[in-house]
Image (tube, rainbow, N blue to C red):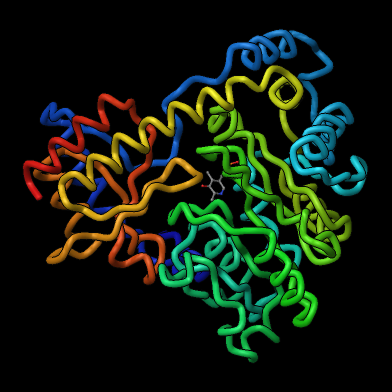
Length: 387
Ligand SMILES: *Cc1c(COP(=O)(O)O)cnc(C)c1O
């Protein structure tokens, strides 16, 4: 018997990184010294107080059982306190906070709660691929809204066709943005609330990078916009803030009814977050925060090493105010894919072609600042030699 894949899997867009992965594996096998600026996975370790909290909590038998759907009271209280401290927004820990097994889990599952077959979700282009994939898994139709450089990579809500807006059930957004590193102000979030109210659309704002910012910039929360809690939720992640990508801990905050829908889906799929990871999350959110500043200082140095280096070789690239990505326009004579391939084959540098993240990503390449300043300098030297 040959297993036949469900149609939903065939509806996923083709995986555009296959060729890069193949060449990368071949170079690794040859023993080449590869500088991987491809994946957005921090190279720095989780702060030691968080790891210690996990050790202690793992020994406690009460943490070795199935966890509750809404997570531990202590974790929701820690999230509420952190949110209030950071954004000045008060949340009801019992109904307006939902811990997640990483924010990707919640983002991937939310369409199952609100999208019926044939419904539309508005999805930025380019974007983190999970908005698109989750919508497709729910039987929905992603309607891509372009992020254009001339608009600061913020979608022009007025340009969304009235028919598409009227049909849409969800809109996904993400600021500070992966992959473009763009940021937005509360004014955009306020326009978004208006747009969502008028069209009856649920806003899902992905805030994975609010703590990763430079030069004194403090990214806002969607929930700081007037009326936001009536129309949407925001996804947060401990992954990038505390170098905890492997731990799987995130949370959603905002509208209680929307969170209830998501939690109903989850309670039929997962059985909560390992208790010791939740307690480590409490330590991350309530313990010393000096690591966050320290990480941001390191990323800023790397950003400067890369962007100053690229500009010195005549490649016009802007310095991002947030995220650990640099979104660079590809030089004349290349496409996103051909540049990524050239960098890999001739300089052993991995970078992400923008076209892999949506058709409007064509013409750009994404560098992740997840390698040391010295390695980034070495990457710049290699690029200067071949471009
Ligand atoms: C890394 C990332 C996430 C996923 O974070 P997890 O909490 O580790 O699942 C979500 N959204 C964006 C845009 C990201 O870059």
